[in-house]
Image (cartoon, rainbow, N blue to C red):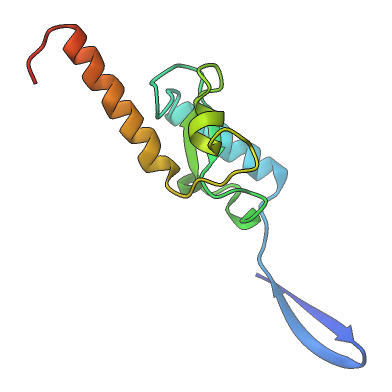
Length: 118
């Protein structure tokens, strides 16, 4: 953490700011996440993008955190519907559980379609 000395109305105070990742670090983390997890966590579709579980606007220090990323696709609408609840201004705290739940239901539907007993 960076320590910054600030002189406020003659009083010197020690302020602590969290060190934020650079845009390059965020880009690198997202690229690595897409390489490791190319399929959408919800529908299994290809070419998923990295979704921030905790929004960068609320948690900027977690922007490059690998544990804060989840693969969701834009083509099937998973990123908007599951990741943001229909509007990009929403924050869905349990998005990981929701995505995996959708994936499980889709997998069951595929198995039932093929006539395999559960």
